[in-house]
Amino acid sequence: MALMHALGHERFAVVGHDRGAYVAQRVALDHPRAITRLAILDAVPIGEALARCDERFATRWWHWFFLGQTDKPAERVISADPDAWYRAGPELMGQEAYDDFRRAIHDPATVHAMCEDYRAGLGLDRDADDADRRAGRRIGCPTLVLWASRDDLEDLYGDPLAIWRDWADDLRGHALNSGHHMTEEVPEELAAEIRGFLAA
Image 1 (cartoon, one colour):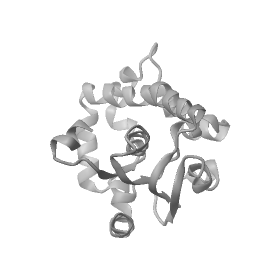
Image 2 (cartoon, one colour; image 1 turned 45 degrees about the vertical axis):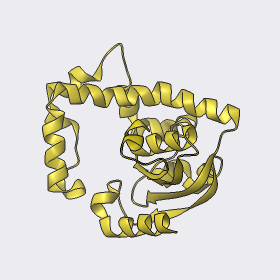
Image 3 (tube, one colour; image 1 turned 90 degrees about the horizontal axis):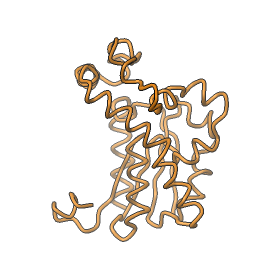
């Protein structure tokens, strides 16, 4: 909020993908008067994801729990062979983004920050979601949820809109024919969806 105020914006829209969606959700809940519209890309609230965790989730998303450990830090394992950590190649995220990732993951500070993000998700972020649910807090601004049909969000959780209906009053959305890296895989379609939503 301080950054947006420094830039001269008292009210603004926010869009977040994956981890950024948790940040966007939190901003919309914590600063409802400031947020005009919210777009969530390929995510459900982290508290909802963890509450629905089963063996399928634990098998596919084991890294959430591995990276979230504090007594046996994942940083040592990842930093031992950073190039082996991320199996996706440039064909999924584009060469430029992949090269940026490869450079970043060789920096121990980046690896530590990545692990801290997962630690926050399993702790602070989930606690905030759970507190919001207990207090009955909801997102009041128009909310768009888009998800990748070739990712596993629907397989793990069913209809993402059904989950978000418990969080947002003014909700719309649908799947895009994409894998998880939506901005790289279907940039024009995604941009058109977001522009249309923000301009409405």
